[in-house]
Length: 422
Image (cartoon, rainbow, N blue to C red):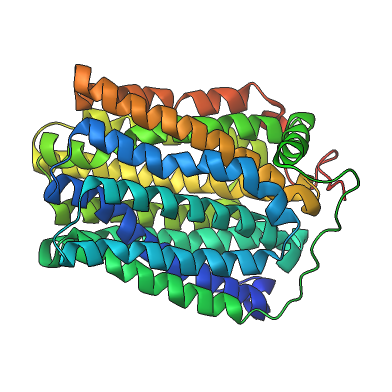
């Protein structure tokens, strides 16, 4: 694939470059952990589908818990400090896995605990990061900024899982997870170099509470005709995506016969697709229009996902189909993610972005827990392949929501009615 030449004003924005570097390093290591934790459960502890469902649920659940309480905290705090603290705490909790493996005491309860705590800190990081970007670079450069962040996230998707598969075969999954702790520390160091000063929002009249914060975020979502459908679409992603988070590894290894190395490479192909999508986000938005692009590409992504449950038991053919699903689906969906994030950050006031992101995360966490638990239970009753098929069909709900909403008529971020209410 031809990599586009550097362009855009953000190449000379030093503080953004530090943020970008921090996100890139952290994202690469996170892919290693995301791949290695379920592999450790499957290969080292021989976890059942129900246990993997609990593991995935505990990874998703913190989105609900942190989302309930963190939004107002993020909006009233210096967001860069939250990002640094989240990195350092994640490094500490991840290091407990190789330590337990070295002592020969690693078991599912510890993986559950690590998944829950690391997941909660990741949700807090994401909420703060989403709210921090507009104040750092301004709204005029949001598409470029989100594109660059997603581009390197895609590069991490290529290298992280592939490297994870190799490391698991060479070193075992728990030891491979240790690499992620180093990346979180490096990320924190990059964030510490940002020099832009933040001014936390003033305390609001009437005091604060997590219920008030949730109410503020939810009201902003339901009042905006563009953000509401994005919210509903975003909730379907973890609902059905958690089916894949729970079952993708055992499905690929046990049902399709892929090796850990081949599975890592297959997932990495999705990163190549996502990188292509990130590079094409702005052109596609201009060509189709922002809203129609969200509609069309959501539908296309769902079509590619159908290749996964349709893959046969032959490892070579199955690998080709999974690679096609990863490449095509990730390429289309990363464009949707970039455009949706830029739209949210444009139409909503900066001082409530944390609370809105928290509501998104809370809803996603709840749906993710429901989906993960349901995936484990359903797979135990009807089989893994059949459950993955249910998830693939569910992915068509998002484009249906988009096509029935005002998004289908939205051409660009400069259309009438798309204004920040600061």
